[in-house]
Length: 111
Image (cartoon, rainbow, N blue to C red):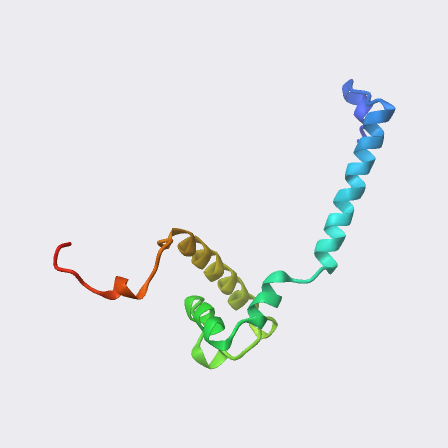
């Protein structure tokens, strides 16, 4: 059954139709940009120093012999695990104390 908006008793006026078409066009542009645009996560991970990439890969349970691989060389399961590890790190980083200094490593008896 091919129903029209007017079939349910709502007839949009010309201004609403124009706005709807504008929104649809913007959405189509956003989808196209997403499909063809750069993958920010991939660019970020590939730009990391090997030590930091190793931390992410370790958190994602990727074997050490694969830590030298670029993001796109990982399996899909591994890439998903890396993204999840990044989410976990972001969540953790938001809870870290604002002030961190070397003297914090000293243990005082009056705790």
